[in-house]
Image (cartoon, rainbow, N blue to C red; front, side, top):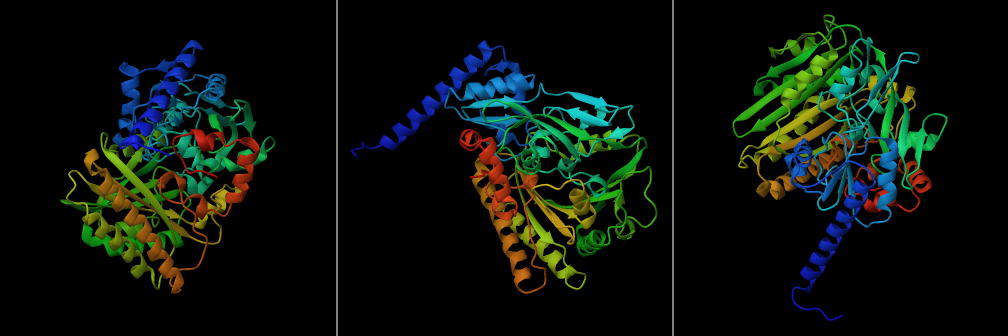
Length: 496
């Protein structure tokens, strides 16, 4: 084949132009169908692109944004997509920072913001909520019922992606993952059909949506089991000086193994930057005040105590939104470690911290950078509840305690994207090697270690780490035999 100098660039530009034209055509078609369509240079279009946790996602410019207001309108969009070749993405709350997962350049962005219903059924004490609402507003929608939802730990977190990734909650030690509390999914399939998936109908789809991401369909409504909560709750933060690290890690390890109370929940985070080095601990107790002894190992270390009793669970979730820094760029990753025993715990936990701190120091010259390491307990108290409520694709065993690590960098400018991307990859790859080495030398048990989708980096092998992948693949072949969602969405962990 004969090519001219620069021919590759011309070809790429031609493909990009064709993709843009295809997207423009579907935008016009959807608008003619009566579906709300937002176009560039309009106020709503600009506001929607600001509603991302990571500003990097908002930098991607879709050709237009379609905002269906019902499952039937979502079905119409999917059917129309079969007549065009443009890529698309689906946005719920925009909390996932991986570019292309809920954002898109030169394609169709489907916003679920108009699917924002909260319907409470007092007969069976379930709530049907839309994927376009935040967890804070979902909780607020149940005001006066004396009931609550197993959902996000910050009010601003969206529902759609959170639910399909499993969903870790302050209430998980009582009720499992958020996904374990789904009674029914209303789903638009690849052919545009609207179906329900539950324990009686489309049971394989029901199972695979709990941890399966965007591989099977677009969920337009979740019916969730609610739980009693007509009381005040307790929570807030402990803040520790950096030299308290070894004591904090020891207290954390002990808390996970001896999990003192199912109503208690914690996240222990370390943060560092050029002029920052601290520990911030998130605490929750599902009553007005925790009994003596639940958090004593941490209070004995001497934190700055900014916990209190809140009038409602919603108020606590709104408070936690304070820790989100709007306008910043974020990258995220995760790793899963079995809990080390008490004999080797100090060495293992300190090694994790030191490795994270050393990698973080390599990017301290990036303006505005903050590195965060979050230790999220995954004890048997959670995994046993998840299994008892029907299980999920993540399938943590009930006879092993774990800690799920969340790794995060936030920073300001796009010119540093490559450097931060390299740092986060070095971080999650290095931690995986470190954990594997501890397993090889017998310091950690050789157990199954799935990744937590909600915190995973786009470059991590989510499906390669699950033992339920073939089960999910069979479901995908049944409900999307042509691989529509594999080929046409702009991001996500592909289930080939």
